[in-house]
Amino acid sequence: MVFDDIVIGAGSAGAVLAARLSEDPDRQVLLIEAGPDYPTAQQTPVGVLATRRVPFDHDWGYTAEVVPGRRAPYPRGRLTGGSSAVNAALALRGLPEDYDEWALKGNDEWGWNALLPVFRQIEDDPAGDPAFHGTGGPTPVQRTPENQLTPVHAAFLRTCLGLGHPFTADHNAPDSTGAGPGPANERDGIRISTSLAYLSKARSRPNLTIRTGCVTDRVLLSGTRVTGVGFECDGVREQAAGRRVTLAAGAVGSPAILLRSGIGPAGELAALGIEVAADLPGVGTNLLDHAQLALSLTPPAGPADAAAPYWQTVLQWTAPGSADRNDMQSLLIHQVAQPALRLATSLMRPHSCGVLRLADRSPHTPPDIQLNLASDPEDIRRLTEGLRHLCTLAASPELAAHHDGTATFDDGQVLPVANLSERFADPDSATEHIQRTVSHYVHLVGGARMGPDSDPEAVVDQRCRVRGIEGLRVADASVMPDIPRANTHLTCVVIGERVAAWIRAEQ
Image (tube, rainbow, N blue to C red; front, top):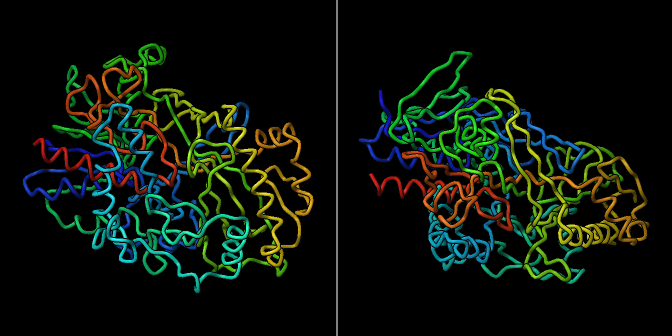
């Protein structure tokens, strides 16, 4: 069989894309996913379903160089639903100015006014203002009412308000800032991944074929025309023929598949013995992730409550001296492991940029991810402000009743909470601590960014068509020309919806 459309990756964008394309009964669609498939909520492991914890047992096993010389695990979901099935279920949109900046970079179909109807289309948020929220969509959005916050999350909210941050009832309102209950893509404690939200309604269609447990090696080409994909399933090499192929394997997987297919920087491909099909120097470059600092607090009562919500409230704020609104985000996370309470502050508008490179030609060899976090001076300055804010949060009277007075940092350093502000008052001390402990937020974007012909590092045009290769698209976080000031899941869903609509309109 020759499929009309082959989609690689069943994650936040790929599951959406395959479901929407298969709505056309005459279109034969193949969806290929490397991980296992759980067709229904009843067949899904409890650890994957429950939003009270983030599971790590359906993972690719990647690592990333966070800063030069220091590597850390880089979790990515390997199952239908992708990382949407294992994330923290924080359903945030980017700010309007994030998407308007995409438009200013030559992608005028991605401005806020163009995307708002799609954000409304994908959600079921009956509590939201109908001017910028939708109901009846596949993705439920819920917030915990203030009177149902657990004591520690209520204390975190009071702490934020006491520091002068305004209260916000809706973090997805275009002009929102401050602290309040966070939006979650969940229903009754169940994480609603794109597998549950989109594929569950599409599985019965005879024109949709889902292959799982299959690792994609490369796209197949005849000259500069895509003809299908090569993949490996249970150790057996296979090929599937297709008129169109869309990579939706994420900001790690999609650039790696492009490179193995001979699409990327010609010099690097030649050094690996890969025949060059399209010399696109931007493949694997322009990687961005939100940089995160954190500390952990031990509750005085002993072991953590395994039934406690993972998070409930969110703080969005602007670093002093920053020109970018809401360039910081803070959360209190209730973990099962000790120390149980984790305070995290993330830089949501980073300038530091990384790269992804192949180690060899094998699809089973993880690519080399170099995040290069905290390399930009302005990032270090704002992370220093974030570190000081983190220390202020930890030392607040509201949270004092919920910990034993000590803070544990990710490098193992244990300090009295009362001394934290003094410990990092010196800028050099703060910078040294940032370089030693900064981590990622697992929100990787870039590696195949969209842009106009005038952008020499653009890999796809604004309709996500790969330059120089007919019939090939990329539709996932890798095409983002900059990172939104938000967790990236909802934006990836919008990318899947938008690209599916364009493919259907073109054919």
